[in-house]
Image (tube, rainbow, N blue to C red; front, side, top):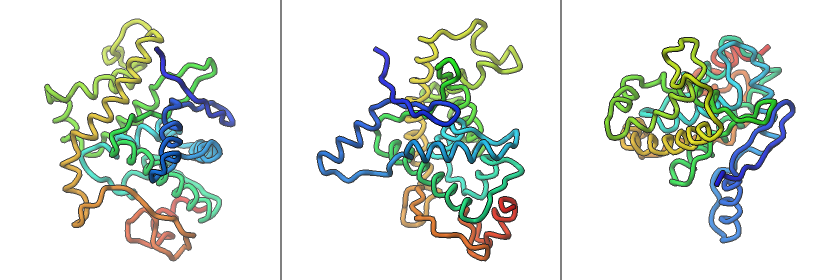
Length: 265
């Protein structure tokens, strides 16, 4: 039986994820259990998507690519600081109207990071955020390519996972989706177009593989945590950023000398 989906209708494209995520939150609230980081609302997803589209760089990401990229960073072998991965998200030329716009973007990004982290850390079902095309089909290619871009950090450790006979299979579906339309025909996993059934199987396998990868690197990630052993989540409330305030990326520099140097117009 195919999974149920809930559809978020964005300004230009529709976003969807299985309804089980909302049912889990509702169940926690009903039972009086503490609710973890809330997923972004429809309006917030629309806003984040619109900001990503405005970046306009050929290397900047859409919302689906961002979700895959963050998933790879979160479940990967090391804790990558924002000062290194943010340029991968917004490309070489990033413009915000003001510091307040930059602060809102960072706040939404960190909340989405936290929501993914909470899901993977809890062992609950991880649900990729995918986009539908004009025909209502979800391909998963952008998500997988975003994941591969996240694998650019800690390449040696990712290679060891890929070559691991017992656990390397967790990457197979992700690579298959990422290379479906590779310009190099020899890199494509299938000669013929992927059927709807096979695509769904690959997407489900990619999600399951993400959960397996999170567990595979879990012990190693602790080596990159602080002395208290805190998990790599970002729990900032994101106060208003002044030009002379510390940059929210964690570099230690003033905002105007770091991310603000390239983001303010």
